[in-house]
Structure formats: C-alpha cells, structure tokens
Length: 133
Image (cartoon, rainbow, N blue to C red):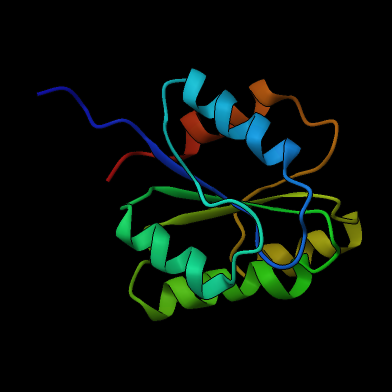
C-alpha cells in the first residue's frame, strides 16, 4: 500500500481578504505532491480547527496580512490542543514582524515564513518536518 501523502490545509484566519499568496501556496503544495485543502478567506480559528480535524490534515498553514497574527495564530494552536489534535503542526506566514516571532513560537507555531521566502524553502521545510499520520 502506498504511503499516504502529506495533507496540508491553507487557511486565512480573521478579516484579511487578501488571498493571492495563500492560493499560490495551495497550488505550489499541490504541485509538490501534497494533498491540499484551502479554506478560503474570513475563517474563524474555530472553523479552521474543525476543518483541520475533519480533513485529517498533518499541517495547517495560516496566512495573515492584517496584523492579527498575534491573536489568531495562537488561538488556532490552543483550540487544536483543546480538541486533542496535538499531532497537527501549525505554521504561519504573511506580514509578521520579526519581533513577533518568539511570541508565536512560544504559542506553538513551528515555523514562520514572511514575504521573500521561496516556495521551495517552504516545501522543503514541510517535507523535512512533517510525516503523514
């Protein structure tokens, strides 16, 4: 039986309606051989967590350009833990100031990718750090 593909969810929490980058990432991940779920814009942390569990994803990639990453990203991790879904890794990307990185890492975000990160580096991070469950 072939090994299950890595399942990645790309999600846009909050009121941020700029999703071009998230759509580019979703297509990149698909082209890299991952199974991809894209939730679209304006998702609450609760909606993202429910979808991640329902879709049995290995990784949630959160994208935020609105500046609300300090509240929204940690909330997604907190809700996943509360639902017993600790095996789902959460990464983040978008307009995130470097001074916020440690707060996000402390909250359980495993990697942060900002504008200028190559698509190849993100795919490589996923291949290196995520194993299908």
